[in-house]
Length: 256
Figure 1: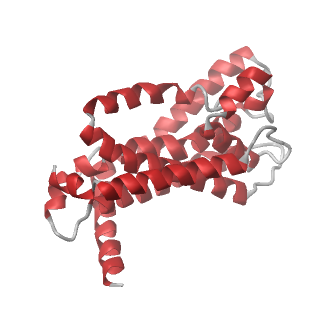
Figure 2: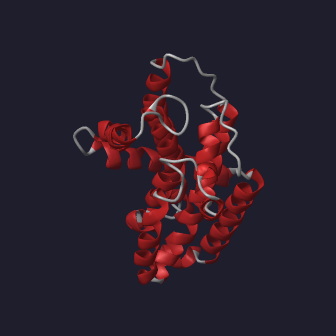
């Protein structure tokens, strides 16, 4: 019980510190958290509105791209933020009560809260201004958020170890992560692709997360090819591997 209380207090303190460092030290720091996804959604909307008359789903280009982008961010934004949680807080690990897992926990919570708030601020006005009423399935949205953040947490725990032990891996991971934006179904529907391309895209668990998130806003979207069992299996396996690696090398993480 004492450990849990100490862990909670340390994570809370680190959460406030991370919030201040990430947003409070820059003019308009909180505003930028909104402007970045808005700019992506606006850019995609303008480009595709010039090409097609209607979006692949529904009638609103901004809503279609926003649901794809926000769903993707539950993994992408969190994974990128967690990868350097330990190295960025190296000086704090000299304190006995601060453990490496505390730094990861604080960043994970902060990014999850940030993504949720950004999603609310962007998606709620889009839904409110739509001419056609839509019913939102919050269970689908919660599932997509949980699975995406779980995969990110597993990857982040593993990468904190791998980035330190193998510096070259950090560059390789960065290169391999770049195409994820293109192969996760953000600006298209995977189930609308030819069979060979569809099967290749659906091997990527992030595509399933985006599909599930969209199902929360589009009741008519059947998401052919979505496999909840597959994406949950990937999430839990990655989390297990991440926890295992982080636990095995926790002393090395503190010592370096």
